[in-house]
Figure (cartoon, rainbow, N blue to C red):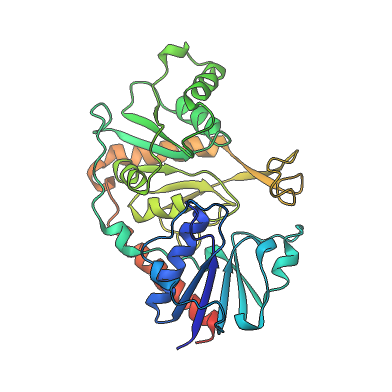
Amino acid sequence: MKRVLYIGYLKEKSDWGFFATENILALEKAGYDVVCRSIDFTTTGRVDNRIAHLFNKDSGNDKFDVTFQHIFPNHMVKSDKFGKCVAITPTEFPWSTWQDGLDLMDDVVLLEEIQSFSPETYSNNYNGISVPSMDADFKFYTIASARSLPAILRCFHTEFGVDEPVHLIIQKEKKEGLDFHSLITSVKKTIGLMPLESYKKDMVVDGYDTELSRYQLHAYCQAFLSENKLELDRNNSEAIFMGNPVITGDNTPIGTMTKHMYKIPDAKIRKQSVEKSLFPDLNNARSFELVLDEDHLAKRMRELFESWKAKPFQFARMADGFEASKSAQYHSIEEFKQIIGE
């Protein structure tokens, strides 16, 4: 049995921590002797209980056959004890000084090519949200940032009339930060189709930031509007596993999740200034952001709504979401086996 070390940000409540934990579970399920090490930015986070026992197997002096380093490239290291060193990275960095860290590794794998998801998570019943005025209607939803929300608002409020049985639910990406209610008001003022008070009201879920509340949102709504990114987005995959179609941009990686993923054109625009001083290599004018083609987004939203309106009970829930998560985990395990050499 080959020994595998997996290094990640395993105490962080972030996509990085989630993705790494799911991959570790897949490696253990595949029968490898897995050991975990966490790089911590804070001391307050906790490791997922499902992998906590894998930290106790680490003496600090062990030798491994393969080491996966699912961390920022500037944290990557090479050691004789690590065996074959494999970087797992969310995107490519051909222009960044982060390439120096990737060059230390024996192999580099894109996250979308190897990401696993636990099927058991998506087989549970997550019913729990009810808004009587919305329950019987079609509900678009998004887990948005201030960067992506204005385009979604413009598309929704220009495409759908106030009397149509369709709603937009907005989950804040983070609890703190910008007041989304003020942002929505500001965007509606610029649309110019009717007086501000006449627009359909949008529901903002301010405080929902737990996994359970997010799964309940997936279960309650019908179509997910993605935050377009240049890396794998957990929310896209989970929406599919919970039975919902996803509208996203051409440049957003989707891994093995192709069915019920509706791609629309988008464009890359250069960032104009450093946004996060922690990573000046990445957040500068060499980086790109994605901008949605709003015409295509609005048309795709209309298409899904009309499909639901014609056959609401057939649209209600795709039966193969759970099978999709099983397929994703199986694909992940097979990819790990090839990398490890079995």
